[in-house]
Amino acid sequence: MATTTNHPLAAAQDTLALIGRILIATLFIPAGFGKLMGFAGTVGYITKVAGLPLPEVAAAIAIIVELGLGIALLVGFKARWTALIMAVFTVATALFFHKFWADATQNIQFFKNMAIAGGLLSFAAFGPGRFSIDRN
Picture 1 (cartoon, rainbow, N blue to C red):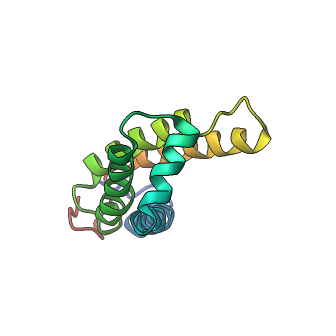
Picture 2: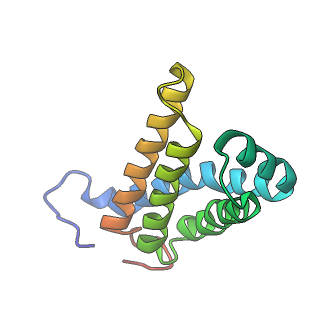
């Protein structure tokens, strides 16, 4: 990504990208680890709340995305593709698990997921910055 020297934040751009990746990773990595350690409970939750077919597969996908891709985003490995996949996953989880019309809490959770997906799409569009494995 080319930095524009006339923008006041240009010098801080790579640092801000790193901080952004760290902040997003703090949401995904612990969630994925929790799902891994409590796999049976995760499967039960997926079955109860979303009623998805093959809840074990859905739980495994969630672990891979949250833990595996969360770590990849944190270190900036294949960050554009990683962020894009995570954004799609985040929108899907909002649609299946946060019925925004049900109550105020679910409404907040739904739109929080949409905001997170927006941040992830920014990484997909602009890359992870120089302080990453990709060093874009």
